[in-house]
Length: 125
Image (tube, rainbow, N blue to C red):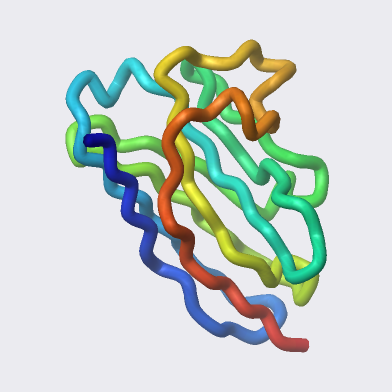
């Protein structure tokens, strides 16, 4: 059974940094495309960043502040978040796609078939 376990969330002040991690337990890890999504209270879940066929994708609001990376040897996906803003407050989820989405569809939830339980990020002003 595929499992994804996120960690690294917490509470920080605006301008601070956090690094999220997502550890996977399945084989052929390097072949899977993975992404980070987030959901703020009262809002729909949105794509934050993804690694699709070696390309890093970001939603506009985090470009230049967040960096996604994938360590295949450790089967771990990271999200380095710098210059955090209160609007980044959300539950962050990692997800994996056994069939990689087209680059233009990286942020579509239905493209990913396995999800972690999430880690909470709270940014105070």
